Length: 197
Ligand code: GLN
Image (cartoon, rainbow, N blue to C red; front, side, top):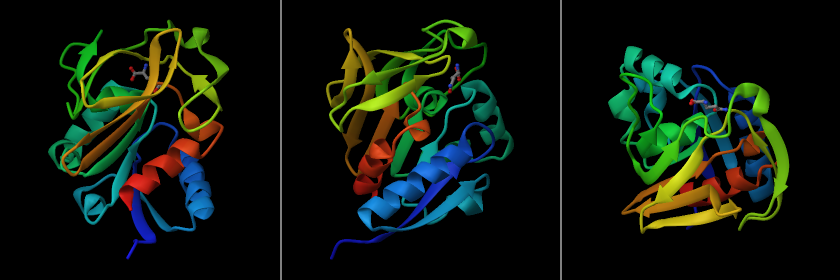
């Protein structure tokens, strides 16, 4: 029988946690899933999660806070993870323009370039086509996905730039977007929840 209830965590040290919670709730309603959203900061919070969202924010800061909370290695065990912007950086196996001592979870077979669209003031918003439908995509000091492994599927690209992709490795599932879908539409959250069922 299909599971209709999910425990979804949002890594809640900083970044756009509230917006992800709202998008997840909307997605849950649309899919008629009974959703329990957990603001995740401790090992205990990570127990029994069906999936985890890593929000946008600052990848270096989030990494340090995960280290301090001693959950860096625990997060690597989560089966389904959705990373937006800084979250996508944290999922990537390879990162360009890392700061000194920056590390990531190295879970997803993508190479990503931090801050590749320029500074904060060069942030922008534009309508893009994706395999899940059109979305108004918000890019805030966003990274660019420079290359992907052979098991990674592209969900959105524009002018040969990969903007969103997903990877299934055994029973693990990872979803990454360079932009922030949580501000404008629940379509990526719905897609993620379907994989967590
Ligand atoms: N530039 C940030 C980083 O490297 C990401 C920005 C964002 O998440 N909007 O972590």
